[in-house]
Amino acid sequence: MPDSKRPTDEMLMALVKQGDHAAFQELVSRYKSRIIGFVYRTVNSRELAEDIAQEAFLRVFTKAHTFRDGARFSPWFYRIASNLAINELRRRRRVSFISLERPLRTSSGDELVRDVEDNARGPAELAEQHELGGEIAKAIADLPIKYRVAFVLRDVQGHSYERIAEIVGVPLGTIKSRVNRARSRFKDLMQPYVEALG
Image (cartoon, rainbow, N blue to C red):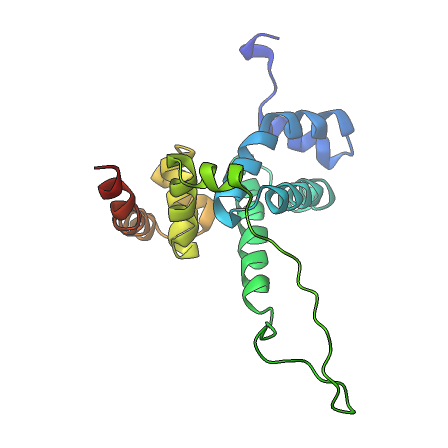
């Protein structure tokens, strides 16, 4: 279909608001890989990124009535995905951990046997981790979340500063500052890897 006849995202959302499943599928087709990529670089887990992206698409459909006429779809959708990713990261930080060094005991004082799943990476995964792509993903994951979101949207996905400010809902100057700080921190995080390469 020629670009002049291709409906805009906003036109598709108007149809989605009316319950048009084909319009929704077209939006999924247009945004699926971009949103999964954005969320993946935010949460650093492919499986979790796919789950969050699916939830974001579900919200597009179920909350279509909240999409304002005249608004742009992309920033609205990225904000949904960004908020879901941030909420998941916050939820994961609240998870409590059990010491593996201190034995568990029953109420009668007997020590319990503890089976712990081995999550160690295999040789192929370890080799992959030492490649540049793995180091970049690790460095991005180590950025504070507000810098990570701005960095991924700007330097990985190529959005303009203005678009990022719209997506995140903060002033343009704040976004520029976050991107610059993220770049500086990213450079610091990558420095040991670059030096190790010689």
